[in-house]
Length: 335
Figure 1 (spheres, rainbow, N blue to C red):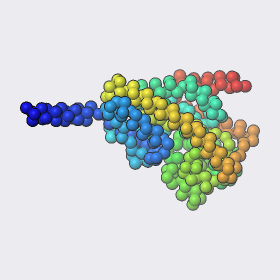
Figure 2: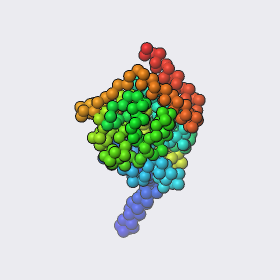
Figure 3: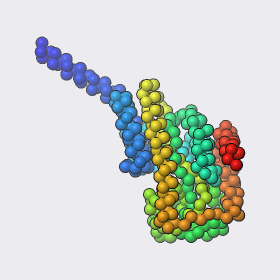
Figure 4: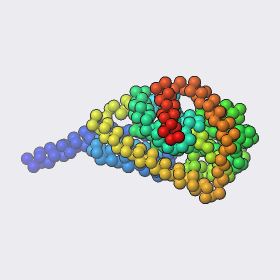
């Protein structure tokens, strides 16, 4: 009788273990963000909280540091089921849902206050519409403004045309801006940029202050054109089919926890970029303010590039018109 009771207890334990294993959903998530970076720390903390709150039913497995390739490679692997999601730039989602890249239109924003006002109006709509296009996301994480940085002071279009300007491979915004200015940029993978600066293959980059420092590009530049070129951001996306396999209760837990994590990432990135810009000043990088004539010249090029991108991406009227209205409203309120 004792043996029978013992066997029954063991059977019960084994059954619980098997049931837990069967019920567990593992979400495989890739990103180019290096392990140990603030992004990864927050996402891992969120994943740990989700595992605890779902009692092990939802587990995240991360592939950081670009081991699964570029954003495009990650999205391709999601399509074939090798991955379930990724932390990617919003621009990489444009082929799936064009409106996701709309914040990156050139010379769109001139201040972070404008960004905050517009995002407060549009973020939730973009998130909801992306879900209709097959991906769950939990909010935007600011990448910040990108600036043109070089070994020579840059002001006019003529100044830039004499430089060897880098843009990332396949960067549609950069291509649109420079083609509108009749400038031929040098496309390179991000991994080759520092070498390109060291060898003279390129002498001008476009990046955020935090990016310039993190990638050590700031050691090869002396000037920053103090005019925001683009505003960029990133998101964590999970394939809708994989997400819907979770119970409704677990879906809500994932949404709540990761939304909170991305609010923290968004806020911290803002602080880090502001601090990085000040760090560039302290390290002797000179900030070049555009003359009124040059600012107007670049704005005209930005308008041409914006029209080109609008045609290529076919932004929805709801989002594009709404964006322009919110910008105009902000300017009226802050005259």
